[in-house]
Length: 610
Ligand SMILES: Cc1cc2nc3c(=O)[nH]c(=O)nc-3n(C[C@H](O)[C@H](O)[C@H](O)COP(=O)(O)OP(=O)(O)OC[C@H]3O[C@@H](n4cnc5c(N)ncnc54)[C@H](O)[C@@H]3O)c2cc1C
Image (cartoon, rainbow, N blue to C red):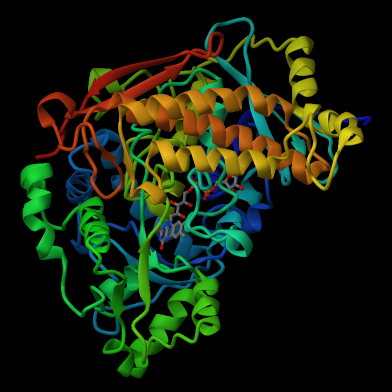
């Protein structure tokens, strides 16, 4: 296939135009008036990323102007929910800026619900405010479009370019257009990775015709992690995968139901069950079970134990709240603005929540950095807040010079959500502009060889298919290549069985992890033989490779942390207790880009808020 190569030289390259990426593009223009700012996005920024379908609530808003919450309160909240372990400097930094981002959304036309009594944003819970958010994503996309010099949609970024003049410095990125097949080379002085989290690394509960239905966006392929890992960036807390309790089969959100509709859960026999597991949980995690609010993972733990004890399914009691016509309307609207498919699932299964209490389930695990979880890259914090170990010059810069992160890409910043991810994009962009202005990105050198080597590697799956299809024996069975879907299922199965997925009740141990890591290493070799029938499958092939690298990182971190810190997210059967004496710390990894070996270490947790 003759492939056109398109070159673009710029100051700031933003990889991924989701919440973090749009925030980055907007802020980069503010500080870098004369700079060339480019966004490269796999889909189309109008409807891309986790917020593509819209949201019904902005989950992170302080309301400091009204004395509702202060940034310190949010740090304490995130610390508590993550069982003590967050990057408090990053969390505080996000929280002190997030309100201004939310005010921008309103200025740009996002409709907010307001309290009739106070005139303030209508609260769903302590941190959440309610919006009519179907068009949330097009609204922030518009701000990015007006700010960037150019938005490249449909570009799957596969690798970061590295400077050949100075060690450990980023120099841009490469990828291909999923529609035209053009090869794109972005030479950039600074790169902000905001390519979202990872679904489909563990086998989903939904199979067959429902396979695409996962809680986290199915197109979130771990690129933020894989791109950074390939470049040699350090990662943190990658073991801290998240499991969600959600409405069954549609993964519909429960936040508005719990907080606004005041619905509650019960087991199959109509009983409250969380207190049943109090002593059991206390035995595992000590006083953490007495914290308020109860950490998300511990609530999952009670759910999982109750189902294991044979008293499932767990129901959400909606029948009472839905008798109120206003609450009934809110209940349905909640899905229409965010997860239409939950309403469709209920309709197809004859469930009317006014008359039938719907089932909940715990999801397969996902990897992300912005929810009740904080996996991601190890980034520098802001200079005015961060202890020495957390600061190396530029806010949100990874351990690779010139490489910044935002949103799910950044580790340690739990509970940022949509608004916090956008805010992080702004913070990263401000720092990236400063990095360029400080002349830290001078004399970057990218040789033609680096570019042409990547080009050959990227299109190899098309070549594998073209040659190998002549040997097809039957249907999709080929002796010489693997299709991306086959590879994906192999990956999901190994992660599920060895690294703590749903089919083993989130349980793993050192022996399982060691075997799992071996299997993932074998896959790394086998995935050199992926075959792509067309450009869409080529995208699938690269998504799979990114998912594999993310999975390897998750498995390595899970093996390293010898305790069960987050029961309800996963369990180390060989270390079934939380161990604050040895593991009240953050975990760090670095994969050597040359040898592909993983190096693990501990980093201290600093509590900067009392
Ligand atoms: C089901 C669900 C419900 C949620 N509910 C809420 C809620 O109610 N309130 C709230 O505030 N937050 C909510 N969130 C959280 C919020 O959506 C995320 O925190 C936020 O979107 C993360 O921002 P991000 O920029 O890191 O990732 P995203 O917004 O997902 O953006 C990532 C972008 O990168 C692009 N990309 C991926 N790979 C590549 C690649 N290789 N090359 C180029 N581009 C790439 C993607 O297409 C996407 O545009 C929810 C999330 C989910 C999934």
